[in-house]
Length: 635
Image (cartoon, rainbow, N blue to C red; front, side):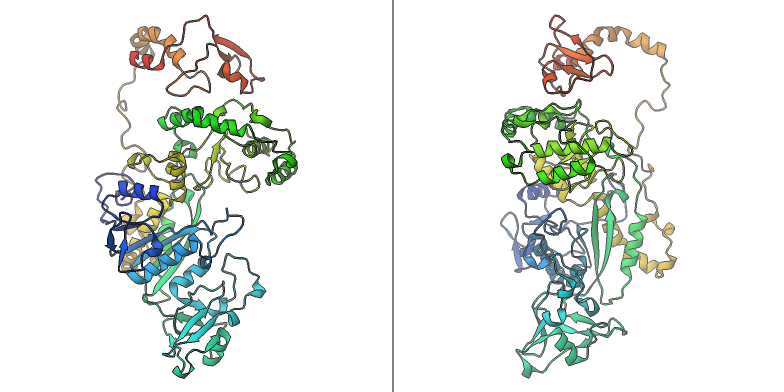
């Protein structure tokens, strides 16, 4: 939908229509999200059951037939392939969610045979082996190359003896046992092989005598039996549909969003010619559609007065938030191994020693045992109270690192994103590009120290290019919104891949020699809309109007300003604890005479104020602060 509307413009004719025929999602809250935003679309709960029978039960319990489609987009689970999983990463064959969903998607390809498909997953997924599963072609020269996730030493890989075949009653070779480094499913039937110097389409058939039915052969024995060169030839499996593949590595920040998110996309298309060059046209279009960053991460963050920010802060101050803070106060000393027994302690001690940071250097939070904390100005004290000692020590260590860097930066006044969900040795204090966020992950807790808070779920959706204002969102929690954003594909990236997949065949028909392709002859060469990439089509009501002079302004507003100025000041945010919708109940408000930092008397107990020259600007004897809503009505 977003692609057909040209990135958000309504009523624009982009030359093609689309039909969203089917979606597949196992998470109930995501099913509800899809159902609200794409009414009438068939929604199935489990991709692994999509090809089991002629009809499949949808999320509403109705038996449905799988609809036909031309383009299949599969973002299969990355949970077991991700490098964030420090231990127990699973391979395709290990029956994890990543392997099962991928194999189910391949099964769908063979059964439904769409013309084009796109697969998306993390950078370190076993892509070479995944392509072997889809193409059904094994380059025997690479039979022992390590293409699997599960650790295996190269000298232990022995496909010649570990890849085994069984002869069936018809004399066909059926795959019996498969080593981890080979992308073939047990039960596949061998169609034949291709000589290394021959036409890739010329498959020489492989058959044995039916008298040998039941006999088991290794790959080495099969090669000897049929004169196959193991270092040159290609083994071909039977497939209901032949596909070619082209793998491309993409980074979200190269497509207009301030987020470093490296993902690989696999372009898959129907073709009986193994040397089909359509993937080169797809690559050409993807390179053309790259867009420079126009805005930093700060432009995607919600203002402090936004309802979502205010509600989140109020929740931290309410009963559940206070209960969590109370539990955190019971934690034992993080740096005392005998008391806490926290396994992450060694990583923190090593990091501090490596960076030359003293163990008691806790500048931002000054955390201590029994929940005692004194935060730097700007941080939300109610949020810091939610964090355990590991999180507090991580941001204190990172803050010290940022200050001690070659180019010293104060994290309270510069753009940083720190992932609190990761250990100190598994995340970075800085991103390679200033103003660009780290990768948005489902369980990620990205701290923005210059804003004093963590990144909200709505902001993560924006960093993925998903306009939450145009979505029918329900009662999703912050955790669910973060999960929704972290598991999503970046909108400009997946739109670019779909557009390239749609246009590549036509581009090749019109310009069959890729070396001579000239995109300026096509509408696709126009990378921006008629507003030339402007965020707003119109400049506002005051654009072009004669500006008022300072004298006119004073004459018009001086009388109104006299009546409202004092009330406006008293209703403004004068302390970090004040958010939109309420003011502090404290009678005393103090302000630093040097920098203008404001704080109420109650909050001085939880903030570091030693470096400020605080003076009282509102005291018990002065006029009481007006209710914010009364002033709003008056205004």
